[in-house]
Amino acid sequence: MPLICLSSPKGGVGKTTLAANLAVGLHARGWSCIAIDFDVQNALRLHFGVPFHDRHGYVAHAIASTDWAGLIRSTPSGVGLLPYGAVEDVQRFAFEHALKADPDFLVRRLARLRADPRCLIVADTPPGPSSALDAISRIVDLRVAVMLPDAASVSLLPLITDGSLRCGTNSTLRVVVNQVDRRVRLNADVTDFISRQVGSALSATIHRDESFAEAAASRRSVLDYAPSSVAAQGIAALAAQLDSCLRGDPMLHKANP
Image 1 (cartoon, rainbow, N blue to C red):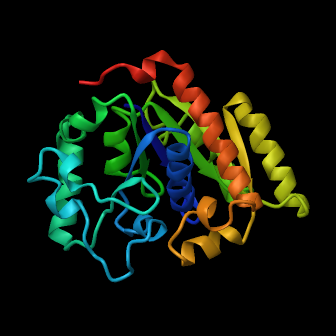
Image 2: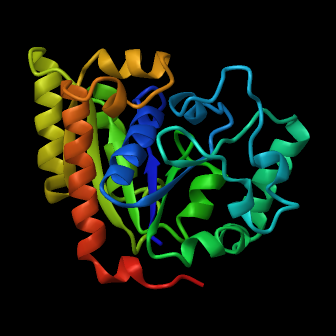
């Protein structure tokens, strides 16, 4: 099964929201999707109907369990979810150490899932460099870098194109510019600049839409909450592009060790 990694050099870009909605969009296109949260903020779960008070997640069991398939929880969207969970510092440090110290830590724990060609993993990572991003870079097939149309994103763009956040030298890169409002001149100019810099790697521009926030507040995907919204149309288009990329590259369907 292929693995998609969503990353960004900075926080606050809407990466987790895109990861959740993209997983739902790809599931609608026939994939059996598993969404994994590698961010200690434990926010990915809030897009899949998990109650706010539910603190359970896979990280507390990640080291003892050598097969994470048994830790997946079902969601109303049909996407399988591995939430990070609320953990003590000692558990978080142990997890990050395992990711950093053992090159095959993720390979072994995702082996059964990766062996199923019908399945697709969508991994949400913390912003910036992290142990999780380093570990995922060894097995990622398609990396999606999420940016905003602002000056900070422009200054950090080299980290995505040729720097520390490449997330796998053999993976395919796609760039998404999120929260685009072309009525704002600087917003439009920055979007066009990023497009010129990354060229064909630009997969989509997602327009700013309050439906994202409203859907998140209801703990649903925007595709389910507001299917006719601009937000839903943008996610559906992005899912279609990535689906085409995944199905069109035979290397993404080879069995992984």
